[in-house]
Image (cartoon, rainbow, N blue to C red):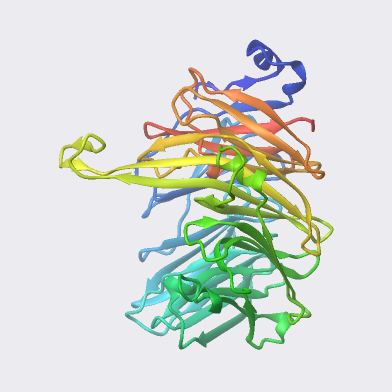
Length: 485
């Protein structure tokens, strides 16, 4: 195969007229990969710097291996069970390789199974996780992974009110526990907030109750806790939200301090704008010692995000929490983003006319990022606003937002400056004290790249791979940071 991979080294940054100190990364691009019937694809790395691409085509499953320079080295088809296998999740395995969780049917009975593959995509272990005894029932599984990627939490809902969950240790290939519990007052689409599992196999299933206009004074969170830390008994923790209405929130386990953490946005009766942020901490060993604190946004912060002169503080519209990043001292950083969708429909000049007539047009906006760093007790350490503007139409926003890379001394938020074919890529490098730099990373001019940073995967402390998709052709793009700035 002819090698068209290329690298942008220091001279390429200098050619863009940028100072030499900005050129601290190497960019490598693979040859085109033609997409045809892909249901999904996943990217994995290994300890030698190689990259694996798992391609799920529904009825065919293929792995392609790339070396550290993204040259295609080999291809291999995977053989799963023959009777309509459906991949539920694919995840990186420790030391390289990957795990596939899938279901299939045998004598009409659903079976849930896991395969473990080596970095060469050789099958090295296989085990049945669960056999179902209902012939006509095919569960719709949700899968969550622990921070270290060793534990899989697999759950599904039966008869709308009964939750079935199990935790599987993928390192030891062992079922840790299985639990079914019924909630009479559960309305899943309305109440469900998040499910997650820690590195020891403890589950948290989080519900948001009575969080709507007119009844926000009754709003509370319910945390269902189960696993080794609870002696295999279901523990229900209620957290009243102090008469506030809450918007977006992200939960995560602080595995270092055995604590469930959450950062979110709230308002005091305003149903369209968030007026502040909140901090939540629930120690695993002392669930009655809940630490919940609310902080209003200050006037200057709101004015900058809304691009208006300082005036009456009306809060922030269309904001969401994208990530919370744990600090080693027990605090965390909440990362939020301004984003919205606007649909324009009807037979007007704002609609698109296709073969089937007029159809709606959807606009996607992904704008400024804001970061709030909080101490272990929930008090504010610092907060920053990182400016960007991204706009696109009818693409589900797949090229927008950002990728978060964690390096030993900083967080790097990398994003497309604009959503178009000829584009530049920038990054914010945020350090632990809140200081940050904005740098140019690369240009896609005349390179036929459209980078999907939301689907990027970090494969080492200084490397990540981002897929590019354009005209049914994918390229893998590896960005390596050689030093911190």
